[in-house]
Image (cartoon, rainbow, N blue to C red; front, side, top):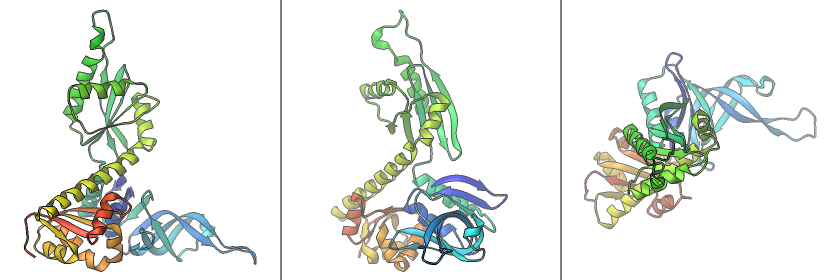
Length: 346
């Protein structure tokens, strides 16, 4: 979840969901009576007889009546009464309308009272998306700029200046003092994930430097045309971060499914199928709950209570898409399974 803004004083937040998981979090955050605004499409009836109706993009604010998943499209459908709209002439006030939210849809949600638990859920969605402690490094052979990713852009943390090459430096040692200092700063900042970018080949030289020292860091290498603040802004606005978030989530899902399959093959602490998962949830034994997205939308009532109990037990929840390898594996064993805190007898 990308959190654009949280305004406690005026009781609203603005977000852009990254994934199905985020839509699920939003469904649980959006309540009847909230005001939700965002871009949408409106079917416009022709003014002249014989012309066809057409769809027009509009911006609407709704007083929410209901928010729920639409099974065929896997969208979060936010239904309500139009409070305001642009262009005004295309949308009648107090008419019914639906915002069909999907990953990438920017939304503003204004509540009567924005509670701590609302913000905690937003932060949880952000953390599981891989946006927490995401370090950006833009470098060339002269300097490296380090900044943490923030909802509003970035927070500069350090600038490392490379020592200039001179006669007193051996050619084989070129770049090493610079790289040693950069490595020390990266370790000090203790990021969960690192994106390293920049023009030229210096980032590849740093990658080789790490390999030669057998140092493993959670680094993804990208490219930018610029360095410094301009390079950091280019990295943020260029779409690489969103791509990384998607890859991070897919890797998390795959790892969770592999852990589950190992437990199953060893006849260990795992639950397969709705009945076993229900028993585990009632016992508070679920450590990680894994659900294929279609299973959730098709069996909503059966899974809602299980999700509630898993959350109360502070279990990790993974939604996997059947189009991915991890999702196919979960669909193949019934659509829902769980890693448990201890082995249970069925």
